[in-house]
Every structure is written in structure tokens, then in C-alpha cells.
Image (cartoon, rainbow, N blue to C red; front, side, top):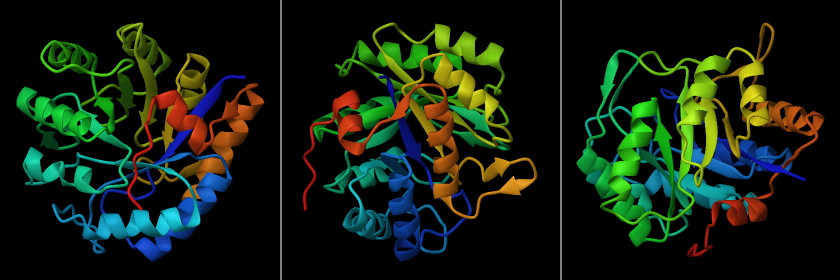
Length: 269
């Protein structure tokens, strides 16, 4: 049976990162079918920061409760340079990390990711044995990464996260999904993020089209149903897990996720 990886991104952009509060929610997310947790390096007040202390405390508390794949973000709109953005890769329990595939308008802001930024982040990931998940906001970014592959050996399969819904990027229609999907190299793995999600149909279409990873959580949307918002991330995970099973598929466990993504567990305890 085909297994779908549910990645939970539990903290919305402006929201604070409170480790002891987050741990309970993420623990329940794993109970309901999530297997990977994606976090930005933020302060307790919700500001992006180059200091990884609060991030590491959050993941440490989460891992006390559940065995989840640790994915650190190297992105977000801030004044940090790429070296500072990659500081979360120094956390010894990081197993995967976001690798941004290019620059774009992200809402009203310009999200800068130069070729040198892409190369730096890719090198930093591979030097530490961390598996990158490449976030691409338009079709041209896939080409960017394919160009970088000629300079920096990347592990096969490259994992692409096709991001839809941001102002300035691809929008979540089935037509856009199939166009974007058609440019993913045949030897690559792909998943989706639907920012600003206000329905479940787009994620269902992506799963039906072969997505290996689906990201859910408050970073992208609190939508649960018509006129309803989730109070906790695990409610979204439970809904998505039920949807996946109704499609005749199943959710991947953390161990299965590591196998699917080719993660060689090297976490320091």
C-alpha cells in the first residue's frame, strides 16, 4: 500500500514558539498520522532569529514525547543572511531541512534566495548528512535546482515541495498543479504545500496525482471545514489522515518516512 508522508508545520508566521505548549500538540499530531515536524527558528515572541536555543528546546521537548522526523527551516522573510538562516543545521537532531529554490514575491515582501544562497544551503545540508526538501514557488525554481545539481552533487531522489497559494506564486488550481508536476524530473520525489488553504480538494488532487509528502498545519492555514478553524494542529492532521485512508492509501510512520526520504538517522541525544 502506498504511504503518504504528513509533514506538520505547526506555527503560523507571526505566532510565538512556546516549546512546552507545542510539544503536546505535535505529539498528538504524530498519534493521528503526522511523521515530520517543520519548524522555523523563532523566539518565544514569534520573531525569526539566528539563535537556535528556542528551536532546539522545542524539538527536544517534542522528541521527549514522540519520535518525529525533525525538519528545520532555513527560510522565512527576515534580515538574516543565508549563513544565519542555516544555523538550525547545527542542531544535532536535525534530519531534514528546507532548501529554497529561488527568489520570489512572497506577499508584499521579496523573498531573496540567490544561486549562491541555494549552493550554500545545499552544501551545508549534505556536509552534515541532512536531507534537503527543496521548496519551489514556481516552475523556474525547479530549473534553478537542476542547474545547481551540475555544480553540487545532490542525492537522488531530490525532494521537491511544490508550494501553492502565496501572493506572487503559483495558485492552487488543478491546472497549475498538473503543469508544475509535469516539470518535476522523473527521478525526483515531490510533495505539496497549500498556503492560505480554504478547502481540502486541492490536497486530495495532489495526493491522487502522486504526492509523496503533504504539508499541513497553522503555518499555512487553520482551515478545518466550512466556517470552522482548527484550535490545534492535530485536528488538521486527523482530517488529512482520514482523507488519505478514504483514498485507499495510508499515512507513513516516522520510521517509514525516514526510509522513503532516505534519511540515515544520525541524531545526537
